[in-house]
Image (cartoon, rainbow, N blue to C red):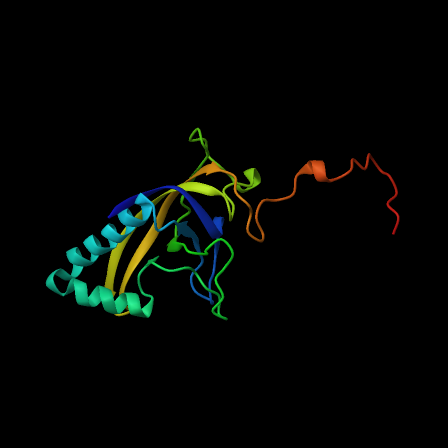
Length: 183
């Protein structure tokens, strides 16, 4: 089921280059921070329910409750926490959705222009519109509700999370040509 999220903040973004997590297959992805008071949260909750209903029918409610307890649903209706149980910066009082893709998602700017890594956008902390595909998994690897990240449109700047936007050339002095640099 396709889901469009508007004006949401992203974190842990690896959108220009696939990244392996815990030795697994390299994937593109991000955590998308969702304000629980917005239409985005309602849309995600309804989509998760609809995907579960489509996959498991009459058993959907029970299966979904069990999957949520185990953290096996891409949409988390709680703040993201680190291994010490502390809430990550930017996730306070927020929900989030984990989305990834084996293929590089579409990355575009405000006027739908293609974005590259050299553009420095999107980055962790900025605001985006995101296109997701939610789907139910039920195979030898278990049951889950997953989100595939299909595309990201940069909307506006936000306070960068660690490792955010790259430095600007304005931050450096012009060293000229062939000047000796003191050791």
